[in-house]
Length: 95
Image (tube, rainbow, N blue to C red; front, side):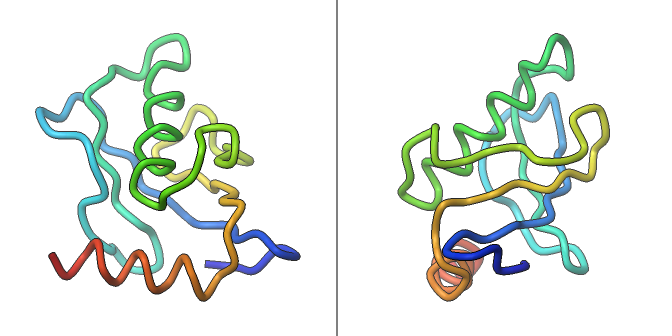
């Protein structure tokens, strides 16, 4: 995670075609997120933003894909301070 002003940039590793969508685990410095959509026509990227918005209590427009549009490793901007992202991520992974 990297602070970007009042926002946070999060490194994400996406797994497509999953039966269950959601934040899965932490792999190195990347947050592993599962989505059910296939990587076709941006559907997986759109679902990734929705899953992250739901997980962090944000509106979908407060989550922006900034890098990795066609890769499994992506960088996503969350309109949330880094300490809040860290706290929420810890809560998600320790459920």
